Length: 204
Image 1 (tube, rainbow, N blue to C red):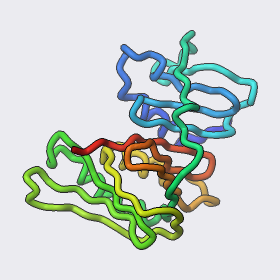
Image 2 (image 1 turned 180 degrees about the horizontal axis):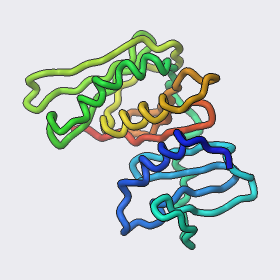
Image 3 (image 1 turned 45 degrees about the vertical axis):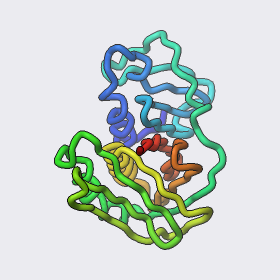
Image 4 (image 1 turned 120 degrees about the horizontal axis):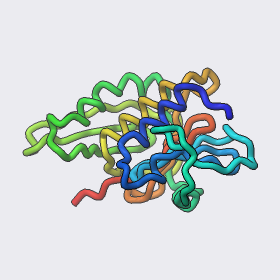
């Protein structure tokens, strides 16, 4: 299997918060040459890292091979998208401190941020409790296709995704691609052979 240490850390970051009551989700699932992890809120697929005929589940906590029924995750992965945009990893790294600040408990238990996406701007914003202040960070995408869209998501999960994907040492892929359908449908952040799926948050 071909996975570097940065990818292994990224997979562990997802499963480490899974409780013992959900043993299948403590595992990385290998099938069709791919490695998959999910905690039911987010999902990572790393393509082409294992033999095609290998099918097994590896518990990342104790490195055992439990006999489990891993959930069918293929149905969760969207195949078509209404909006696509490309961000440079350098721009994403520059915005991470602001995004992490939005994910802290200082803003209360709800760590929801709003994404505003258009050809001119990729914007992440957060309104504090009581609407006393708004934090915003934005920059222009390097490429954009489709319709402008706004959606909300968990700031911690978004920060984890951006940080993990930008840490991976891959000189051939210096960008991240966001692929979105609607404001409530799961969306992908992709780079190289990695798809990172996040689920938006419904805001009332």
